[in-house]
Length: 519
Image (cartoon, rainbow, N blue to C red; front, side, top):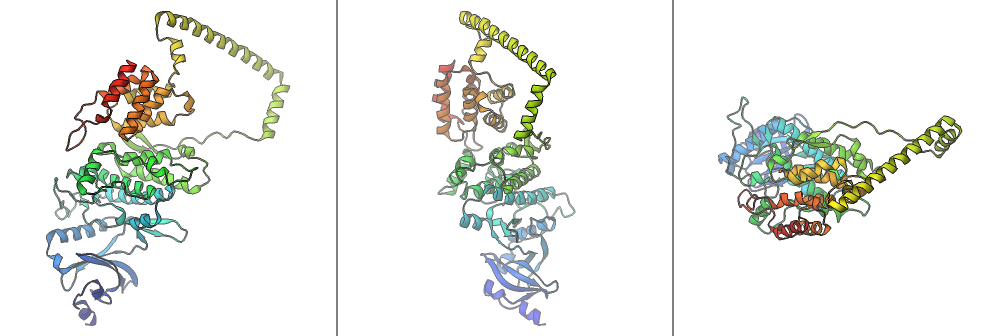
């Protein structure tokens, strides 16, 4: 009887709930947060003797079918998911005075937004670790047919464990999209129709912002925004008005993570190329250019976090020995772990013993002598060929062997990449090809024109692209023409979902001059 009287006490705001017992089992302990439509409390489950999160909708909003549908949706969505990085649902019911409550696992710690606001840029391994937890939550949610649709730093709570490592959990599935097909398909019907915009500006993917159909890749875009902001310590999309923000998001590529983050990093610390490439692909405006699922994203983030936390790394080059995401037909897939590198003895004593044994062994000495003679003969033949073909070129202007040698031949492994930069329509594939050229070692083997063509593809700012085009024209290497002509051949009305525009409008004059100079 006492519990029932407490439950029916008049509500004078969130503070009026303190000490009340709801449904004879939840005692309200303190307020966690309060909004216009409801509040969230810490409550004690009297029978289980454990603390839980207790969320309510105020009575005046309980009659609104949209609010209640979203409240029910959150309970349904989280009840379907069992994942350590999602605050799972425990109970759901009606408040005695009207309204409703939803009970979930209590997550200690603050939200990710507050963490970024107070701490600024995170070390990239920590950012990758937190992002891997979010990706893990998405893997489970998407596997259950649930798209979150409102993923943002405020909806990620981060608890710092005893060992100092973070534990992130995703909250608030109130506007989640549940796929129909289960027994409760009627209850799982979409709350919104195509053409309705639901979500948070700056974190909604472009297709979500214009009211198109969303899927798992829309959540991955939001994950990319969160990861970018964790590393840089500031908002990705900044504008004075919502219209300006949406215009930027729909018409401009996301600012480069490498360029934005480098100012906050120590002089001897850079970002792994794999991290930059991952964020670039997560933030692709076209949904088909993003990773197809959260599975390979989670694997790459876990690998980056583990390697970065080891801190014994001298450089990020050793990332190649771990399972990472690789490109395959415009999608990302987990690549197999390469074979362990062969260990080369580096002891001075070992090398000295080996050298002494070679000097003493007559068979080895003869073999080395024959090898030297063979190498000398080959070199002589090469010089003869260079002289002969060079003479032919000077007379006929042909592009023979001397022409190739004199113009820094393109390494065989990069020829396909250059062809893709000149003909591939997919932006994601061209960027991967450009990255392959940019990362090639030794870089001294890459011709200047190839470096510039790759740089042109990787640059995102118009003025930076314009500068590269001018430099390509000044190089005088006609091998850059196919890539420049591909850009010049792009339609003037090929960009933008809503407002059609010229993707390369700022470059047309410089492109024309460079092509004219090289043709």
